[in-house]
Image (cartoon, rainbow over all chains, first blue to last red; front, side, top):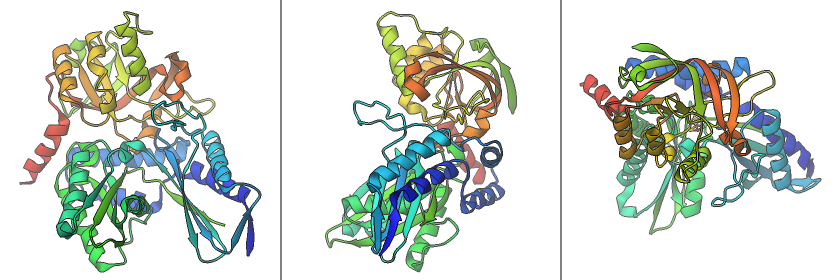
Length: 280
Length: 185
Ligand code: SF4
């Protein structure tokens, strides 16, 4: 049994909130620049170059990458041999969000009630997902989520007979119909299987996967490739102005499901595909 | 083609712009998003005057991050425009000539653009740091209580935008993809 003070989690969340909103992962930067090189439609190439300039400006001048510094999605992988002490874990995470967003000059984008809509003025609460895993460590993953892309996400409860084709059509159509709204080029997170609630979480977790590693399962690796080709062949392009760079990557996560069902969810992320992690 | 335009943004100045043109805007523009739009249209419905002169005004749909000390502005990229669609036609009727946002507009908005000879510009969604550097001054004009959603007057220099819908109603979100795909054949 290992004791971990929850204020360590507060610190981790605060520092990740600041960091992820100013610096993108190397895998995302590399992918954007590869796409810019491969793009042969001049207006599209120009937009990708400006997106790269934005990444550079954010880092060098200390300006957040995007004004929508997101709703704080926090994923905690807690080792089962850990004892969290010193207060409530949920409060600790929210304190980290409060601190990180204030210190990082980030935008408060959360309303306390979905219909009565008054701003909480400190970007809390976070959307927290807890997973209990073997071991005695705690992994804190932080992914600020912009709602331009979140709003274009979808779920479908397909019937098993719709199969692979049904899933592929749903994913491609979702991205196509989103058009310029989710700030393409996007990262497409796909969840397949599980239940109504689980499949959306799979889609969100798919967005945390590194862009330069293909799926471990060759069957789904091939599907990711095929979907990426199909999405980029539709011509939406960066910002929806035309071009072949509509998506940077398609990432699939799956789970066992019921004999009568085939849930599929698509969670879109914009090119400001922010996430980071700290292991305690 | 890249065109430089300096305010005031009269219909005459914007009339020669065509969908797809790259534009560098300089001068004074205003910021407003969901909540400020709701308030402005409610004021108009009550017969009240708006807190700024909307004639020849460009409204930028943006909710910036807080400015760091010594800086005029934080990160300031465009927000998705369709959420302003229910309000935009009424404001164009009052003399607004331009909008800056991202993503497609409704048919009603495009009709209002044609009727009022306005222009819808798109800025690059997600390029908030880049846009921030083009803003040299910012002051709150009204709705201070809305925080990031307050109505602001910005002074901008060479702010890069693209004509998404010109005053004839040509829509890049319909033509851009088509043009690209035709070129590929
Ligand atoms: S979708 Fe992403 S890039 Fe676009 S405004 Fe939102 S956070 Fe920024």
